Image (cartoon, helix red, strand yellow):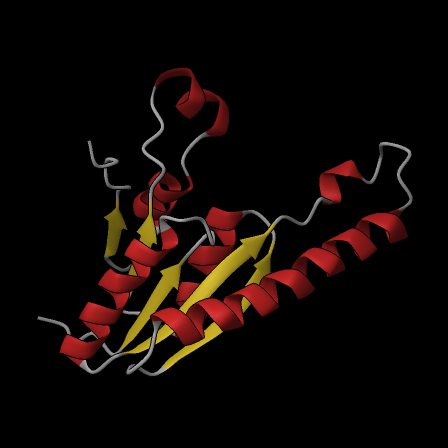
Length: 150
């Protein structure tokens, strides 16, 4: 069996991201692995032709990235104590960026959440997790949101 030395943990900074982080930390501790925690901000490049000046879009994306970097630093400090972890904010389409970074980093495993969308929501929004699972050259562990307590 292949050793796990590097885990890419993809989060969206939603409430569910904490559960995803718990799995990544558990696996990292058990394997003595490093964790790269990534968040993907949208590029918004598809809106350049809509009479919105490109510099306005670039400024907006820059603000999103700056905010995401601060949020990621706090998220990693709070949720990845005791393991070697670093955060990165990527820009672009989430599935493509996660796959690209996992390959560039030589990740042995991807850990990420799913939103559990069904029906029309899934058709309209697709599934980042599904695209990553179908195209990743390494194993992918997906974590479904837990059901609210009744």
